[in-house]
Length: 311
Image 1: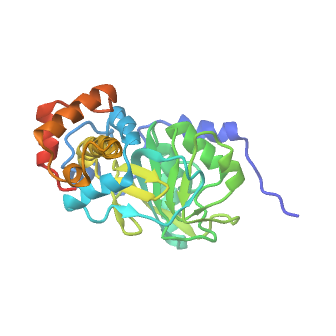
Image 2 (image 1 turned 60 degrees about the vertical axis):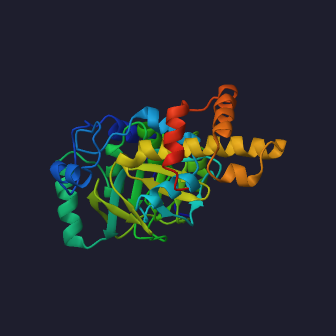
């Protein structure tokens, strides 16, 4: 019987959690990352990655994928959703800012150069652990592992513990992971992967860190808002996050009010599903006083939402 060598978790966490945050290994410059995400006008991380505020991440917990997808699609963002995942905890969503990684099949000369350069900059171990060193609270490790399953296991339970220690979050891998039982025992950690496999990672190397990547049909840029739920994963561009979140919350509150009115018999479906009369608008605002939500509305903001309605 063969046994795998398990290094002390405390040593692994010390290497990953306390490594200086100034070490970067992205394959595009800070200037290029800012150029590609130029529509974002808010705060950025030192490497140029958009920093969606924690307050928005918290509000994103109140929205669903269908409403958010519709808003993006209506604004021309047609390639932001990907489904068909194996989920560690299906009832636990993952919400956070994307730290992206692109993996490719390895070849010895290229892998040696990448390892030599990375180790000289302070990165430890194999390249699949390097993105973990870039994580901060609220981040999500999102990796394009070209769908590799056998020998495409980007993490096991050791790295899973390190990921959660740094980010308080989970992972999204277009690849596989191993040690499902150990990962499931990490409180608060979740993983969306293509499959589970007992093999070790082989013949694979990190080619891009905090670069644009493709996850199935979806385009993902560093700093995008990751909204991962049972249905699948929506990657919301950072500059669209506030609009999508607030509009999706409004749609949810509007639908809840509409359902209540239909059940009570006060209005017909034709009245609720079409442009609202002034009477319905005033009743909605009164209903909100008794059912306050994550966003505040008055008559002016309500009219603005309804005027721009494309859903």
